[in-house]
Image: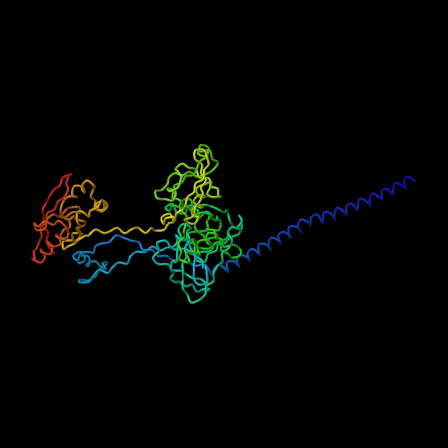
Length: 525
């Protein structure tokens, strides 16, 4: 009986073991297949996403490329004037086969002025031919030409007119006139950009037209100083790792909808390394503020306070008892701030309701206010806060990066007659003119009471060259006194009419601190 029971138990155990093995095999098979299925599904999803992104990039490039132009700029290079080669030297050099001078009796052909060529990029702002680029691209340009790419395979170079430029924002507008409507780009919202958003830079870097580079927004709100020679910085700048190189300046930075969110302006290149993947673009919000005014030919009017300002170090913040602010380091004469209660050593902590934490904040708050408006500066003076009202002026051209209209000085009455000597009356010899002639103040004071005409210049090829010096005073011509230009002219006319071969000049000059006189004869031509 026990034996029978034992055999039955053995059967049950064998069945349980076999079932366990089968279940284990099934479970193991499922477990092994599940990760592979998940990996395959992930790879399929990743491939779909990459494919979709590639499609977006290519679609944006196809939309943007026809609107991006290359800008060719030619700027004349001024060189010193060269005197014409004397005929006797030309005769000598004509024996050499490499000499390409004129034959006897011919004039030397004028040498064309050398030119400096520059290149940049731009993008079409409107269908009637307005183009946006950087102000520094067309700075000092004599001729500007634009290469249009709106017709596939048919680039067209056309002359462009500079409509307006604003160096303070580094934006400029060009205009081209063609017989068709042009494709153009619309502005996007740069404020809506997020760090790591995809962007695309398009332009002609290193003369490689229609180049597309892709990256992300690396940072926003940067402040850069692209040109140390300029007295201002650029703010609200987008940083990107989309590759930007020389020639990209002025080209668009677009989002994945093909909208312009920035205008490429600079790149970081520490030392000889070249581009290191840090590029900068002017935000489209700045473009939106500036470009319409430039198209209308309007000057960009910015507020002006007329002060010099300094950042505060941590120690200075503690010294002045403030957490932040900007120190007034100087106040310009005749500036709006000079007519207010503002003082040197005041710490500005706010303009109206805007906090001032660094110099850029103060500059932006003032420049962004319409000239003529009154602003309230909150300052800390001797540990106490106080409010100061200032009526702003208009920012002078030099601070906006534009040439100032300098008053044209009155030219002294200079008489030149036969001898290659330019003269003017002694009483017209101002300290400024004397300084240009190399006459010091002591010498000027000594000849100021001398009656005669002062030599202002001597022509290089003339009878007087090497014998008369600028700054000498001609007191007599042929023994006759010449107290002014009229008398000098009369004596020179008389010498010519009397067919004299030469004239005699009495000259007075200062030598070793003393007035000295000498007499010379000059051959009349």
